[in-house]
Length: 402
Image (cartoon, rainbow, N blue to C red; front, side):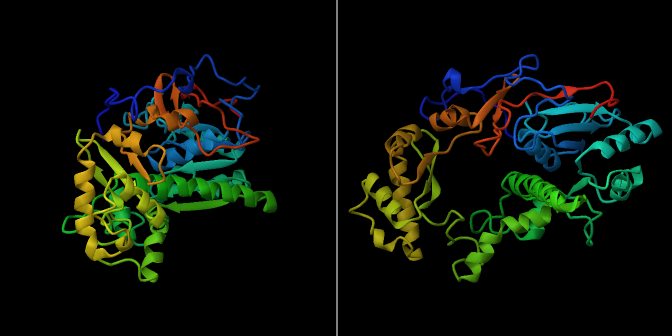
């Protein structure tokens, strides 16, 4: 995990956003009026949908953040004896925002009874335990669907609810490895490089779970019945890597790392260091964008743009581009390419991104209880999401909720 560096590096790429572009909220001053319900908010296309979340790490909370951002009323159940990351929601953590939180001891009859009562009134239940844990607690799909036949019971695991690896522990890197998504990542001649835990945990896990929940809610409108959604990070990581399978089927992807279009080998799809130690990202794939790139770098007389896809020319072209970008600082290149279709952008740190003029203009980031974090997405013309989302709120008891 990167250390937080709040200091801006430039006004072009990482300076402070205009004051009106940084939206703020406090628990006492929501931007939209509260309804008479117990929900933190009702705005958004999922307004009125009740989600019961059982505390877990990373992918399932991310899915519930997406649902909350879109207007769902998310109630998180935590373990009163837990002292880990799931115990105390933090207003600066996007995976905790927009929640109401209550502690229930599920191993005690009253805690279990309260959880079953909540499941009976919920539209969606989300859990991220190992297979069998919820059943042993008395909160498995059979018990909950018996109380509430319309319930969407969403399960988030690494390996899935069945299969030889189902009961085993794992993390993002393991799910990427087994799905085939990890091996193509990284430079040739070096070990594969995990892309933080973006792909399996969040893209292949949380995002896939949210899609499954939304699909099940749509289907319920036709059938009137709930069902179980089995979202596995391994399945999702494999699904995300479909582009590689498609390129390989067309003969456009080499099995070995290096020499492929999107793996950093192509000089027109790579990052380059600048004179100040910053980086720019280049994505000039289309021929007209490549011509624009070479022209703006002043290399039109030295680089034959007709050989863009000639892999034998890539190493020399990459060296020439590297020399050119090394001559100026990152933010100077950002200025020179700002009005261009050459597909060149500064590589920003997570702490700089909110200050970039484009992100500030769109409100891509928001401020929750004084903490900058990504804003809800996507945008809706008729039923916009609550903006900005609210920090988590704790309850002493779940009695009377919903």
